Length: 47
Image: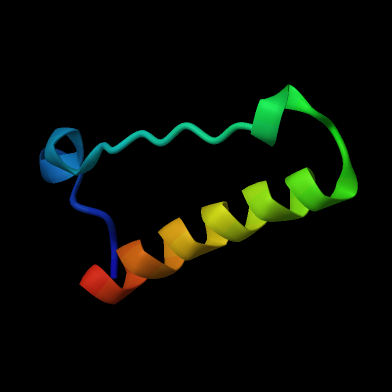
């Protein structure tokens, strides 16, 4: 289904993700990716 650009402005959403205590390690990176994919899944389920 093509995107209707006339409604694009109403569809814009922004999220911010960060590392726990700004610490770069495998656990924190995996946590951020997990939160990103959970957000995507939530959005997909709302369609």
